Image 1 (spheres, one colour):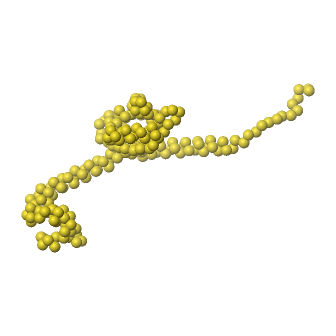
Image 2 (cartoon, one colour):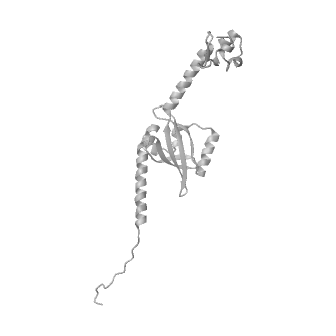
Image 3 (cartoon, rainbow, N blue to C red):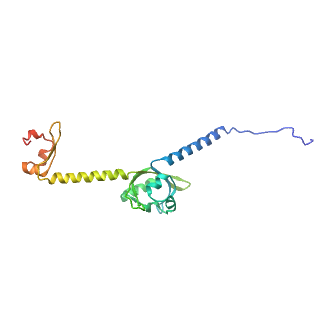
Length: 212
């Protein structure tokens, strides 16, 4: 009655679980940031417009920028990232990718950047599409395979050169196994001089044919 507080009623709520959840979320966000920052693969998040089929960059790590050959600013300002790349896929493959985006199904492929410096390149990518608040997004993980493709191309060219030299040689040449002398391959001169068809020689033992 004299204006003094005689009692206080309070309501308390246990927020321990919520606090733990917030801490866990923050820790996971930090771990994800550390992973993307230090990843050897390019990681990006893009928006996707199903009407125009354009991709616009939302976020990416430094490795993604380096693989592309463009500046981060140029990538962010690009109205469509697809215009900066060459997709190594058929029309039917592109249609499948589009359906995967709409269905939220991961898919993969091989693409090359149209780099400003013109440097040949190629990368394998995995796309993880998802939809949020009515908008389509794609998480991309890009692995640079330029060196591997270069090595494969060099090996293929070397094999082609060897094959041409092997087949066109005027000398008789045969390739056999060391253990049992099975004929693996013969050149044209070998067949012509001995008068055998190729199928009659491959897989046979040279000593059984009385030719070596």
